Image (cartoon, rainbow, N blue to C red; front, side):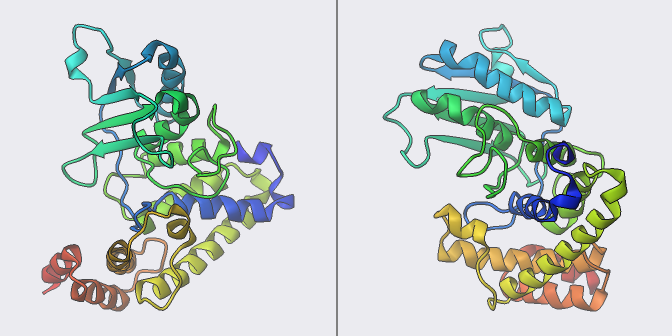
Length: 298
């Protein structure tokens, strides 16, 4: 656990970094804050492509690590009579496929942004070993690329195994408190509480206070971002993949998510007036979810 690495009393900055990392996993590299998506059934994986035998066991090790933390059953159906029932495909591609700045990629398929129906991972032959744990995290629905100590980082601290924060993410992502379709402000307290739970009991009250301060600061930043007055989040800048349109859509989504947060009291104190204000702003920007939610009020 994180607390086993450095005592919280000596690492308030590390706790803050951990909370920031958990917030950043809730952002897509296009510049859009995301909802929670996750598997609600067994994962049946099939391997294909070139040189599969050289990468299959290591990739399975990565998939077993993430599914084990999430308590999701993993079944390798490669070469089995029921191979066609696979809902996850891992393809090892030639080295001249994909892009140098994206040697591995995961695609998640879902009819609605709640439950993962199927997925596909592509990894170049020469990069498969270092990509396995990174893509395994994406397979589980964790779509962000945070800067912190996680295999999801663009500048990873570790590539051949999960880090403590990765395990925190997965336990929270698949905990009973989490549900598919949750907004970032609904999901953040679940993630943060999982991290606080790793702190020694005698230091947990201080950690909870640091968590609440982080919530308040994040809300202030997102108020500014949603209105176009604040800076673009660092996780978006680092990706190099955001577009002007993506950021405009992200601001619209953030306005909607703030409305839902105030409506439900998620991360913030429930406030119907604030909820309507943010939903109206999102609706004006063309957000259909906000338009539908406001329609239900009237």
